[in-house]
Image 1 (cartoon, helix red, strand yellow):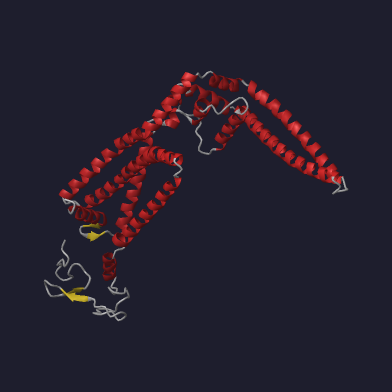
Image 2 (cartoon, one colour):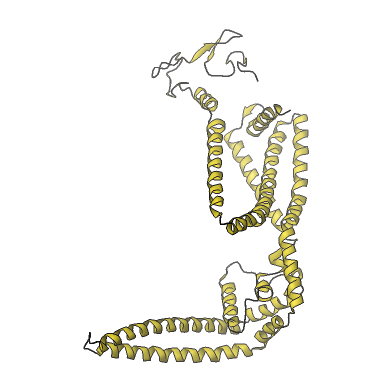
Length: 404
């Protein structure tokens, strides 16, 4: 059974590259390639639209809801800065959507996201948040600069006291700079306090923070548990949705290909064979994507944590090096033995009229290569006609000199 697989693959490859037992013309090949690319793009677009019906973890529990409810990363001291950063990031995103689909969101997250969008979509409030973020950044920079200047002032003052520097002009200049920077900092801090107070009193901002504050610990725990279930099962559910889209296409193209071969319809056989390969590409990628989601995110993470606890992280790096070496060996074998094998090289040389030994161009009807002296012909064991030395089939009678 296994011995039939290479022959089946060879015949299938011939159906992809030939028509009526003749190689495809370049024009026909271009048409087929464009058809393959168009169908492949349509399949991936269809997959995206089809699986969009399934609410994933980021749709069911948006990142904003995770940060506010589950992780509780926002508090009274940083919530305005985080809100301003979120609004600025959304406005700077060229691919942003006007509103999220709240029908797919968790009932606990939907009102919080709606309250956030009311803040985000108000132009005046968004401008105030950006101004608050700018002032907060400026005050941080000013504090850092004042700390640096104060360090330089203290050093200069100590040198002056020790008598290393008789001039006090430098210390006076530094002291004046510190006073100016402090005045600017006080002005920025005052402006920031007034602006933050006005933002905090805005009804939409108060509604957002009130909704977050009203989330109970039980609701937070339930949301966290549901998110864990979603993270665990979503890859399998997504694959199921993708297979519901891909398997009918695969069945249809397989049926068409089998009927075309049985009915000896070469044009339909060519097209259906290509479409069969095209639909197998996303099937392979989706299965590989599922394996990637399951293995690295779960098994490998647990393995790395175990190695870290045992202080054996070096083993993980040794494994990566071994896998890279194994992959390189496999690729070298594939390229050297399968794609660029000696048999294929000799076939190309014979087809182009080159020497089968050294690859130099031969004069017409040369029995031996004038460059290396290699004989180009032998006698066929069936018809006694001259045929190529390294040709598998006799050029006179088609006899296979290497059966099997």
